[in-house]
Length: 242
Ligand code: GLP
View 1 (cartoon, protein in one colour):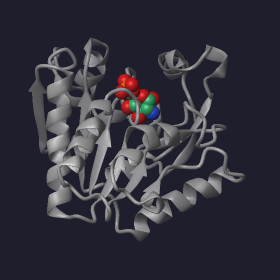
View 2: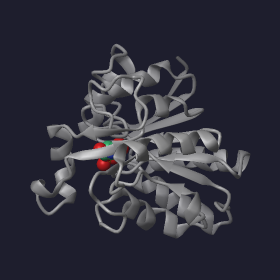
View 3: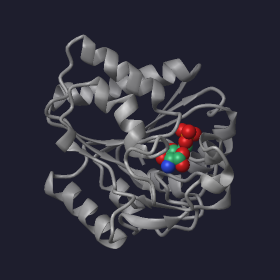
View 4: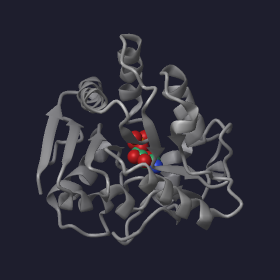
């Protein structure tokens, strides 16, 4: 409803805009609960957060929940999202390890892992600010097209297009996991504030469909049109069809 759309020139300015929003949130509430994303889109944001930290911003009270994790990858696997977060953010700021949450992709009972993940988010009072990237098929987290909007954290079968998009990070396509754990659309929509970021022409169709098209589970990110506080930060290439 109240979508604030910011179009900037390139990846660096997108990263600066989003980092400023995160830092403002942390200054407003030092014990903020942040929802974090992986992929290439937030990498610039995380290195700017490290710079802010080096200049005095305190992360010691921050609580984080990541959107998703691959099924079958342990946290020390270089392509796991736990590993990504440790490398790109957690080891670079003074966040407390026990305050960081990422679904456990090697949990014995995946259903129970999903249930308790949503429960833990509830226990800390919900997410104050959720960062989102977007897949080229408009998925958010790993909520693929067709995922009902009422879904909470769940086990996902990845689509062919997502497996293909992510294959570049693995030695071969056959090594890309075929399942993931993902916060659901409903879990994401519970966040008080959401920032969606995208860069590059490969995201232009997804951004157009999400912001200007009908609200439908076939375009998972279109659900954000129903959220009361969303900021979309895109570079010119990703925003070229708006
Ligand atoms: C993955 C992640 C998403 C991410 C998307 C886009 O599938 N699960 O959370 O938004 O990829 O990734 P990138 O930012 O690398 O384009």
